[in-house]
Image 1 (tube, rainbow, N blue to C red):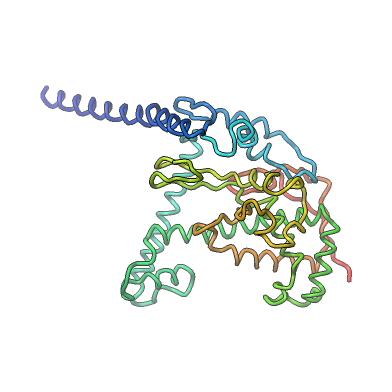
Image 2: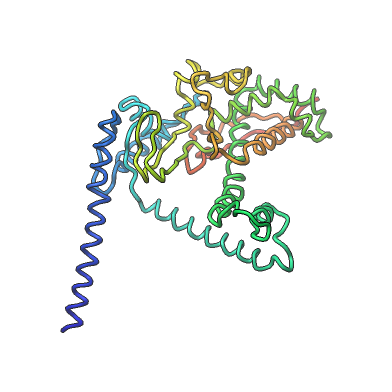
Length: 367
């Protein structure tokens, strides 16, 4: 009887602790945060118990799932970011919404845990083998070498930071560049005038199909650079980024509480007419002719395809060179035409991709 009573008491205490924690997370904290931000002029859609605003987001995304755009319509936010399209006009550019765990999120977190476990094993194996084989001469080896304790001084990167860098290069670097090139092919095929201009520039600076473009040649491709920048603006491979606050921080005169997630809907921001002008929804590479910073003088950090500041994409320069090289090599050899079977419905699945693929007609480019 004594053990049964102790077990019941322990279970009751655990249940009470869980219930109290749930009450704080699901009721008290949302109300307190909403009240503090409302006092600073920040509003947003109402909080729904246990699901936040996920039902609203699901409803809006379901409504946009059947939307099909014309190939000249570059505003895909009704499909990929309908919640921002509806809430920004209603609540302003800065608003509060609630994003609580879902089954999909839990699967993502589980996969992330598995990836981290795998990378941790790889790193530990490298560390264990350093006496015989060294750290290796690849990216991971260079990072481990730079952080080696035998060099003395403070450790440059923690284990978590090394893992994050590996994830960035192994996954983000490959996935985002491939989708950037996908949308570049789409825009070339739907704007034959620009395809001809770029092919002429490539052949003038890089030669014909038998000559591989060098780094110096690629640096002379001014129109190509403008085209890639406009592709990044209209079809940023990562249409949304998030940042978590570790402590309370003041941003733009608003005090953001600790452990809040700041969402930057890049696709929506790249179509803001107040920032980019009345032609924000149109394909116009020449808007970058005077330079990125002068294209949107009201906001020098308006182009966010690679994020901005100290947390910007570490591989952005490499990605730009790679994109120019691949597009140049393709234009040297081929002419691109969009297939009549193509359905224009860009969709956001972590990265931006054509929902139904990108069927194209590819023919050999004439002399």
